[in-house]
Amino acid sequence: MIALACDHGGFEFIGDIKSHLDSMGYDHMFFGTYSAESCDYPEFAVRAAHAVASGVCERGILVCGTGIGMSIAANKIPGIRAAVCFDLFTAEMSRCHNDANMLALGARVIDVALALEIISKFLSTGFDDNGRHSRRVNMINELDNQRS
Image (cartoon, rainbow, N blue to C red):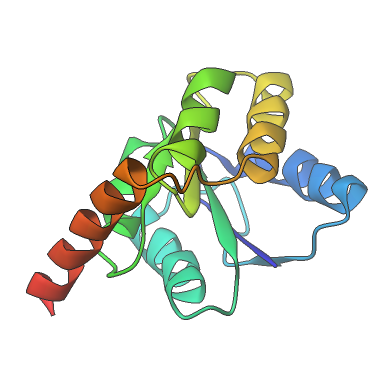
């Protein structure tokens, strides 16, 4: 299950993203927003992040104007590692090296065709659990424990 959320800046991408996930065989839950009317992105990012952190959803995809705001909000939730990605390399590395569990995209930075390619790369790439990357992700997880 993939958690999806957007703000008004990313709303135009959501229909294409949902269709893309459907075509890949992924179920998804949408946490808003439900229109292109101006809204506050943290509300939607946090809803999706809680779904990922709790295990209701395996991963999440966030879309706002740049991806930055929603990733910052999502990363405030313990257990979330949201990465802003803008090309296939950053999507692959966010999974392979950082075990990112949420992808943040900027609808004002990339076009929808590239966004769908990035999503495919993010969802198809596994974590390279070779020791050094695990050690670093565990260090990040410890930071969550310090916030609790």
